Image (cartoon, rainbow, N blue to C red; front, top):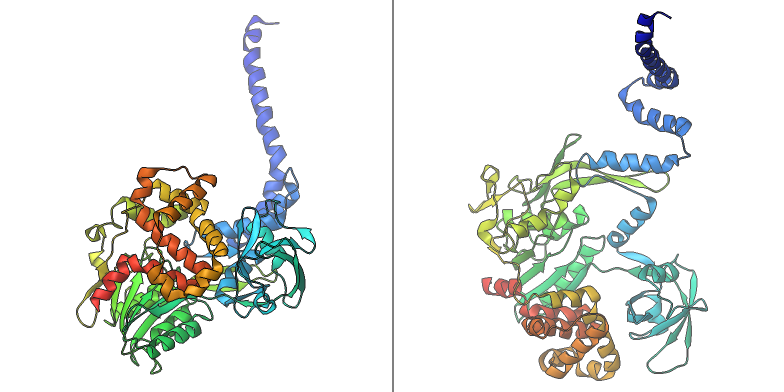
Length: 530
């Protein structure tokens, strides 16, 4: 063989190999790719084409419905933080608190020492009608042991909730008796309340706390407000702290109770939804009541509609910290399998014309961690750290400056109360020690506490050194390490919360909030404003 040819043989083989690999790659993939591309008549067909292609050609078997749900979820997340896809189960879970009821046996419960303990039988529910009491231990459900098996909340809900009219059998131990009491409970419709409290702070000032805006919220609110008016209410503190929103039409009804006829409550506008301006009617029962609205960084959506309407109409004083900043309106559309999408269709605007939606990009985590960033930047502690946007400045009819583009800025700032906050206190919360101790204490002393009556308990019951020490010892058994220095720093907060929690076990929220609020700085400041 020619020596010159021998010299070039390796190069020739390498070129042939490379050419073969190139041609092979084209032969392996050209047919499916051309077929796939030809199926794309328009861009909207791409998603179906991709899903079909995966189903036909992917190396492993995949569930197409799972891919579809994931694709829809990702698609909506790229629009804004509040457009979402929900499975049928998630739709039900989301609707339940908004509809104001669910179906079940009607108890509030805690799992304490691996035992289901009844905290309260919900008024009007089937358990109350049968005589089930606070403190009862549910030890069997449908004849099967329910205690000492590390049962979880979701397991209890799965066993006790169910369609109205169906029956469930439970075995209960009451007090120190070792005998079982068997109940066959017919499940029914159980009300879920959204107005947590309504009582008089003093002779002229009432307090109402609304935790969300559900279908029954307006009726519950009117019931509380009417009762307080008969008790002499001239001023009202409406507490919307921690209220993440709910139904727009219910927030509008609440505003209508405070505003005079013709006053603007809210405006909505979207690309496919012409501007709609909603005004107050002449039906309000609280138009002459002096008003303070409490908000914080967790007050969102419908809460901000109420606060914005009150602030922009110079109707009352907003007290607290800057609200969340959700100014987008969603519309729900159902699929045949009961899943749904909630798509943002409009923005809402307060009476002065401001949209209080805070900025958002594609990173949802950044959007929802903005509250933490406020803390890091000092905004929750200092009013002058609030970053207001002068380009989104508005004036109320009386000339007060208000801002858009990032929540409702309060008229009176209340810093986050960090005094007395320690890691020991945090551990008590995390472990649920105060709640469990208060339940046990109330259960052992239920007769004596009930006999005192709420007002006497409030004025005469104190958390003394002995009871405080019992709580600390109880907490240690639950894994909360004792820290004498931090215990003293947090003692005032712990004592107030413990007393309020004991009262809750006997009188529900009617006992809890009047005690808890005695040291609430936002409420104390609001009382002075009147």
